[in-house]
Structures are given as structure tokens and as C-alpha cells.
Image (cartoon, rainbow, N blue to C red; front, side):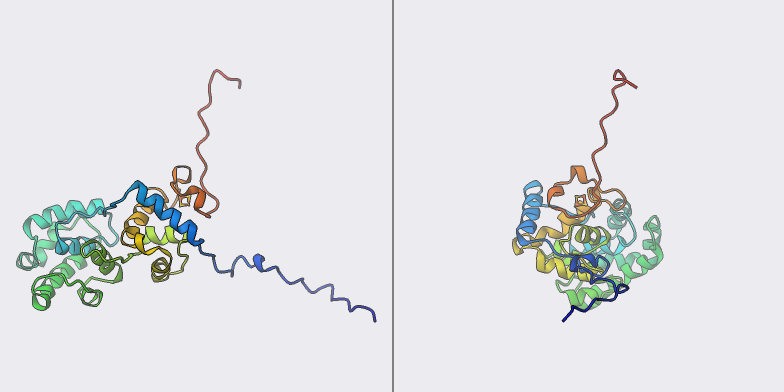
Length: 249
Ligand code: SF4
């Protein structure tokens, strides 16, 4: 019996690898993940955030102020603010108008001033003036979302939380350490992927990597510590050497 001919108009089935748009990005193999964090740790065993603070309260306020603002800009404002109000009690006594005046150089300062005074009132009323070491309690404070709570839990209380900001979101996707469409997806992916012994510092390693090396517009791939392990394409290339004017042309 002759073989049935398939219709010439019918397209052949696409190979599994051809579905570029719909295929879920693959995660890195565990050995590669381990090597990435081994290198981050070897270079910077105790990474630190760049928001200036002296305790959990001043850290909390600094992080609340840092939304849509640079750390350098926040530090400039908090040096003035914390000189006058380093505690929740003093912040409430200072009042919203004065707080607004002291932080007016940073974005969204009106809403942030309101939140800083309101969260200070709530800390006094419900937590004896202390910052609670609990995600649920932190997220009940005005102006505090999941990302802020994660930074405070990690930096002030040593918990292995990973706060996903714009830098970390980019790095998680480019490196495929934790591909995801939302910050939460990347955060949960990193929690699964990052080996436990590196989890405490993963947040700072990745955020600093995104801020200074794996930059949004032009990542510095030639200088990147994990260039050979990162699957991102196209990587940026080293600048060509300057032309020697003595040679030809
Ligand atoms: S190689 Fe390039 S894209 Fe990959 S992590 Fe490094 S800087 Fe980012």
C-alpha cells in the first residue's frame, strides 16, 4: 500500500527548540550556580548595602525613602533627618512638615514623609518603639512592602531573605539564576536556586553586581566575574585597542 503523502501546504512540526517565544527559559545547572556564588564570596565575603543607617529603625526609614531614589540621594537626606530624629519617638515629635522639608531632595517626598511619621507612630503604639523581626508585622507598617521587609529582615536581622529590586530582577533573568516575569517570581526562584550557605549574602552580591557590572543599558560583560558562566547573549565585547597612528592608514 502506497504511503500517504502529507499535504504540501501543511507546515512540518517545529522542533522543540524552535519555540523561542513560548519556551520557558532554562535554569542554570546547580554546579554552575555554586561556582557563581563561590566567586562572589571569594571576591567579597561580607558584602554590605549602601544605605547609611545605625540600627534597624534607621535602616527601615532609609529603605522606605529609597523607592525610586538613588542610595546616594537617600544618604544625603537621611544624614540631615537622622541628626534630628534617630528614633521613632523623635521622628513623631519632629512632625510631618519638618520631615518633608528635610527629605524634599528625594522623589515622592510628600508621601514618604507621611509614611515615615505614620510608621514611627505605629512602631511606638504596637511594638514598643522597636522594629519587629517579622515579615507580617513589617508589611503592616505604612509604606512597607515585601521588598522593604526583605531588606530589613536580611540586613538588620540576618535572615536569608532576597529583596528583588530592578537590578536583581535584571540579573536574575540575564544570568538565568532565576528567570521570572515578576519580582516575586524571581525572588521565589532565587530562594530555590541559591545554595543555602550563600543565601544570606545573595541579595547584596546580586544587587551590587547589577548596579555596577550587569548594568541595564550596557552590561560590562568583558569585566564580569561570571562571564564564562552566564548564558546571556549578546554579551558586550571588549573595546578595540586604540589605533597606533604610526601603523598604516
Ligand atoms: S556576562 Fe554580562 S550579562 Fe552576564 S552577568 Fe556578566 S555583565 Fe551580566
